[in-house]
Image (cartoon, rainbow, N blue to C red; front, side, top):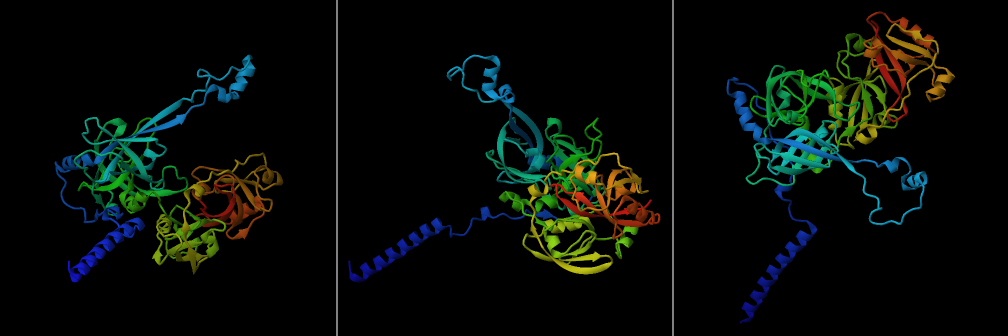
Length: 521
């Protein structure tokens, strides 16, 4: 071989070897570009206007085309039961009680594992991805040790599934089949739940009472119904109300519009306890869950928090005037968490948030939705009205920790035989005596009046006053006794609104100041 050919041969060999080594290094260091299959993106939704006729075949076609993407879900949860010896001190106790020497351990005398009890549950879900991802309610799979899924017309075949991500606030969960049938999976299409209006036709498909793929039809009865999410106290979600029949087992199934697109996840019902469905069912708007899907796939939901509680009721004309508002819009802050982001920014109970990050705030749910969608660590401008004056504050949003937020409230019920004072607002007060402070474990420096009872449906009840509150101020004036509170409240004219600053024991046992408004009947 000539020198030129030899040189060319080695050059080519070195280039090939370099490429091969480079590929190995890249694979070891994960430097190659990610596969498109690993990219988590938001699924498409059809936002075209809902129009067109509804005829005799409309719902038949929806049931025929969409039922294959709906699944029945069965869950099992194991719970270890306790043996009798555990309640009475174990084997030593049994030996002392019945006497006799301890036998040498043997195969027969070894303690058997405690028995287990199984609880079963049923629900519904719908397939959102050909890789076997299924949306359902969080309460359907919460605590489940085993999840099994039956597909439409599966001839009894059952497929195992696992939880991928859960969100208690929207009561949604994403599960995935760990084994899949041959031939692929049908998937649903998403509609736009923001386009719904009361009176729109909708269809629910589910597994009520284990009656597989039951179809019911109704209309949207109302929008924006505030309903507490499953297992998340103090947090409400705007829900779609429908009279399409929803029963136990429908949970997690799709609510579909007249195009057969998913616009909600059937979640809850109102019942009179004597029957299941009475025509009042609730579905989580699909837009709330759809935007969470990328996070559900990662297994972690990240939300913003600023550390306030807001009054969920809309403003009356009287309240708006009392708070110095030009119109009945905004979110009234009732409580500011000590050392939280809002506290650090200078927000106070009684402030009304009218703008958040440059966007107007319509009401309390609007503010909550804007905050939770804000990336933690972001500093946002917040416009508030305080005693009739507008001002801008900057709040640094932190990450919401649901477990910390959902600490149990430990307030004791007020009791005792102190003299009570009626206020004319449907609540009774007693003096904040030293005995009451000691019995209720209240801070020793509190000064005011203790609320001992609140009449249901009264002005105080409508203003969110609760038993155990200690009234500190009325209309920004400090009060030191129950007589002071009554005197200030009696000066309010019928139809006018009074503001209260109360001390209330929080969910974690710590006290906090809460701003309330009550309108005199």
